Image (cartoon, rainbow, N blue to C red):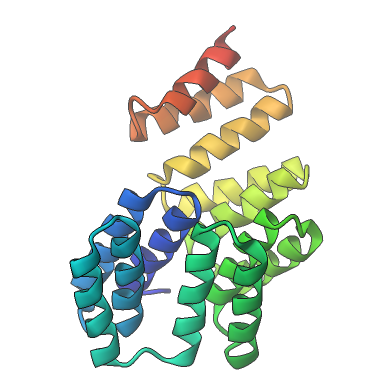
Length: 220
């Protein structure tokens, strides 16, 4: 099972790809609390701080990454994260492919690859990559969430529900998985199941406008 730092690191990458910069920063800070000498955590932190406009802090974080030695694979993952944040999906996909040539056994690379493939419109490749990711790191809730999202976007709704159920089994407070599961039930015309999922998502993230809108739709 991934350690706490790696789980926070993966959560930060997911938040970055979802456009939630503050959540990504918080998750990376949690990862650094678990291991303050991990160069990959510091490199991601430097990227996030730069995007937040905290340039001096970003330079200090980059220096820490260099101090603790960032390897080539982690550097490529960072390039993928940066490109994904800028919506340069093909560039991100290329960085992931180069990382996979060096370390095909690392599930987090497959997860990043899958996330960027689906955003770039490469649906069948994204399905294959996400399947490989859950095969390599089956105890990571965020990877099952990603798998479920890709299945939803490719209209494989029953499989998507199963993936989201696995995600919330591993991490019951993963609000995004509850919300996405509700979306699938809504698409399957199962309003009560959808409403139950949206209510759980609302408990975890009160005041979220998107959740409120979804609840209003299924309550009509």
